[in-house]
Image (tube, rainbow, N blue to C red; front, side, top):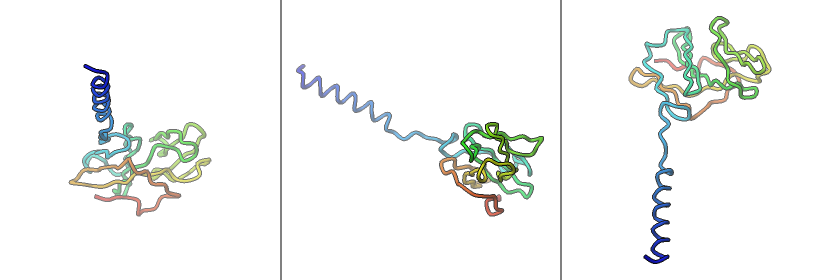
Length: 146
């Protein structure tokens, strides 16, 4: 086999292997994709459930609406924690705190926590973690109802 044939064969192998890595990866169920949180009925009113792989908390308001709150602080990007005994989100880096809906209670965070779009499909709560939504404050229109 000549040098030209070996070069062509090597190029074919490298090109074929590259195609495997060019295939889009499914992000379903993890950050950057759609996360199927679960059935609507599995989230009681007033609950906050963390989805670590999706990097969000799913909040069900006392009125029954859903809100997916990004766990990234709007101050410097640290991860916030839910403190159920205080009924708040808390950033351990600089002590910002946020209420149940992600509104700033204690700065230095400059605005409310970002959210992700929520949809209810066939009784399932689905969160699109590929599209963070910036907001200044919480409004009732941000809640999604079943």
